[in-house]
Image (cartoon, rainbow, N blue to C red):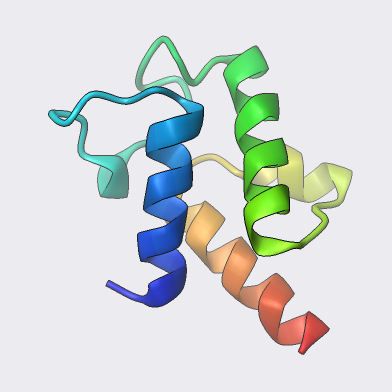
Length: 81
């Protein structure tokens, strides 16, 4: 697991208050009750804070899974480097 994915996993667990039995790596939007529209906005804010990145509106809408979030953060970090 990449460093971004490992840190992002922690953000998902904390932000969505996930139990240990949830497989974060395969998690998709609305797979669990905690990842509803309100949980999504809290998650986006937590990711932006943790990685010091800013998502645009389309990226917020398109963040549909943990894998997509990893890809987005990785791309934003590369663009800001």
